[in-house]
Image (cartoon, rainbow, N blue to C red; front, side, top):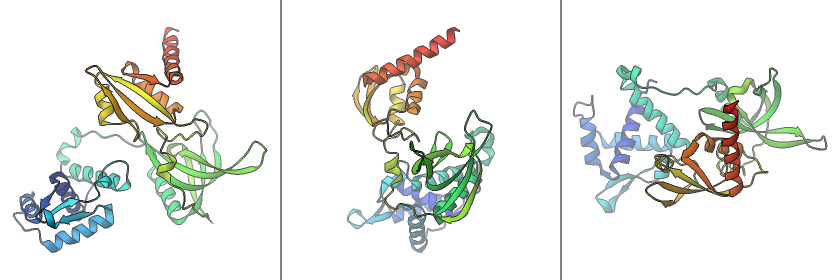
Length: 309
């Protein structure tokens, strides 16, 4: 990924201020002069202000100056560099791309994970979202050899475990056989073909994508499964992994010992969440609720029984 010179400078400026916490313009200029390839050239205040404006427009990151603290600069809205915001995603992607661009000689020693979902699908979906146009997608579920067409209104896209998904509004038949609009999720890597239609739709401005998935572990939103308080006990190194990479935004630590740590999470315990717990084996124990602990025990037992056959 070749990063244009200006983007490299934007990333450098964000990184410099972010890592410093608070820094004067003179200190920024000093670091700029020591930057590889700059040959002690000054970082003009005009260029600095132009970069600040571009960073705000591109990433939504506000670089403020505190006149009461020796005119030191700092990142005003640090939350934009945390969590799952699109600003953080864009910044992180460009930052990693910049790092890779500067280390081409190490390309055989920097291993990345691919995302199987096609770029064409994602580009068409986001274009349809932007233009508020319906899409016609042909979808092939796992275990089938046929495709089924859907006319859908694309609401949002979400990345989860190296797969892109699109949340759409489509019409399905209800229990009475009448068409009824509902929200449905499709995996982009199961979409065989997608076309943008001329027909437009009115996007519900009251819809909040982040709020819609707020109680989901991943992309499953089952209204028949209510959000619950779940307490997990993590043993060994797993307690540190959970601390550094929380399962869910609601996760927080409620107890710690030398052997384990307890975490509380509020979410819908759907099958994708249960599968994740199962994948952690003996290192994760469900303390509450009891019905979920029993479910996980029965899944483990079923795996043991299958291995005996």
